[in-house]
Amino acid sequence: MLDIKQVYKTFNPGTVNEKTALKGVSLHLNDGDFVTVIGGNGAGKSTLLNAVAGVWPVDQGSISIDGADVTRLPEHKRAGYVGRVFQDPMMGTAATMQIDENLALAARRGKHRTLRPGITRGERDSYQDLLKILDLGLENRLTSKVGLLSGGQRQALTLLMATLQRPQLLLLDEHTAALDPKTAAKVLEATERIVARDRLTTLMITHNMRDAIVHGNRLIMMYEGNIALDISGEDKAKLTVEELLAKFGQVTGSDEADDTLLLG
Image 1 (cartoon, rainbow, N blue to C red):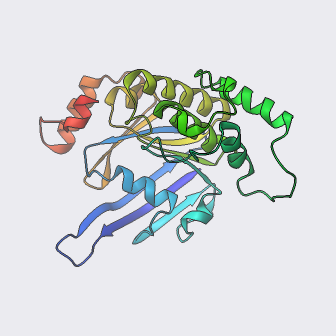
Image 2: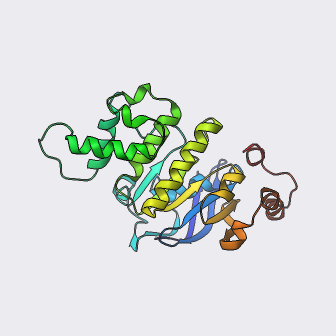
Image 3: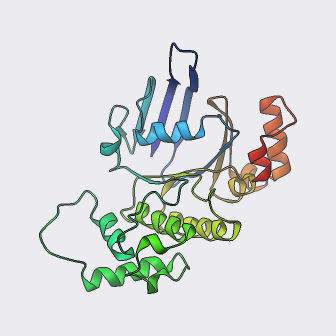
C-alpha cells in the first residue's frame, strides 16, 4: 500500500542552517499494516510523514501509494489517497460550523457538488452512528458548534472526518500529544477501532514508548534521518518498554534516551 524508496530531504541546502532530515529512507507497508513510528527529536519522523503527504517535494527517491507514483504530486492532489490527523486539535475542523456540517464536508470531499441544500435526515442518522464509536457523547450534539468542544473531542472528530472516506493511507502525526492522558487514551481506543474496522493502512508517530508497543502490528524507530529499528510480529508482541529503551541506547550509542521518550 505504501512504498518509499531511497528518499532524501535536505532543508536550507548550501546555508549555515543546512539540515539533512531524511537520508535515503526506504519503507514498505502492506495493505492493512498499522505502523507506529518512534524516535527522538530531530530523528526525521514528521519529515517522513510530510514527505508522504506531499507537504514538500523530496530531493531524491520515490513514493508510491496503492501502486500509484505520487512523488511529484502536490499536496492537494495527494489528498485523494491520504487521510491525516495533526498534533494540534484545532486543525482539521471548522470551529464556526456544527458537528454534522463538519462531517458533511468530510463526506463530500472530492465529490461532485449540487445545489441541493442542507443535510438529509438519512445523513444525520448515519453521522450519529459514526459518532457512537468515539464514546464521547457527540452523537447527541450534532448541532453543537465545533468551537465549543474540548480539544480531545475535536481531535476525535478530526479522526472520524479523516477516515470517513476510507483513505488508502492514514497518517497520524502525534495526534494525542496535546491531550490529557485520559482523553488521549480514549482517542487511541477510537483509533484502534476505526483502523481495525476499515482495515486502514496507518502510520502513527508517537513519543510514547508504551503506545508505540501496544498499538499496531509493527514498530519502527527513526534516528538521524533513517530507520534504525523495524520490529513486527512476535518480537513486537513480546517487547517491553525497558527492552525498547535498551535498543534505543544501542542504536544511538548512548544510555540517555530522549526526554520526550521517557516522559511519554
